Amino acid sequence: MSDTQLDKHSIAIRKRSVGELFNLTLVVLRTEGLRVFGWFAVFVIPLTLINHALLTWLTESVFVLDAEEEAWSVVYFFGYAGLVALETPFASSAALIYLGKRVFAADVRPSKTEVLVAWVEALPQLILYTIFLLPLILVYDCLPEIVVLERSPLVRGRKDQITTFRRLKNFHRDRFGEQFVVLLPLFWFGVILVPTLGLVVTAIFYLCVGPIEKFPALFCAIQAPVVCWTVTLFLLVFHFLRYIDMRIEREGWDVELVFRAERSRMTGGE
Picture (cartoon, rainbow, N blue to C red):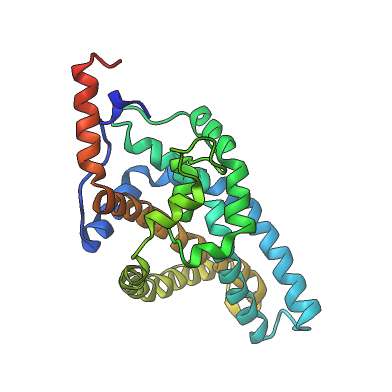
């Protein structure tokens, strides 16, 4: 991102409390929700089909459960939630790139080509860190944002370069306890959001299809992805904003951007 764009933000770059991050998340979802969901859906749609096929096979062939049994729905839903947790770091990559570029585009939204080119450039490290080295996210919770947005080299080419892994370590140093502090309000938010979404899906299903008792497998196959991916979409935006907040707190990013923008104006944008 060039210096000339660093003072033109769609989101004000400043330190925020957890409550303010929640409010800003709702604002971003209201203004950019459809576009973020569009980039998210690029992965969510095929993963939904894959997850359904995998869980159907697992429940019926491995656990030997009938679709009419209550245990089938329980295994399916919790299995789906587990798969979504594993898939989200990779599935959120394109949406994160869009959000990252949108922050520095106050008037013009990034084009599809810009997002796709950036995603392809980040793909090798995405595959490495969000698939093969995914357990690292338990310690480095901003792993997806750092991999797709900061674009640090995988291997150091010069002595002054910082690799992605080194960047992860530096960024999360002395932050392990804070991660649990932030998880608490997220947990309570989930306690409210998940049952609410479940009730909404139940009501719509009953009106459009019929009693759940007659179609338990179909209901579960619809409810699980809707609830899991909707919650994930909110958390994706919230966590992106928290990543920006952490950069401001740890690195004084807001001050750095002001000085870089001012330097650009003084030198005529060169």
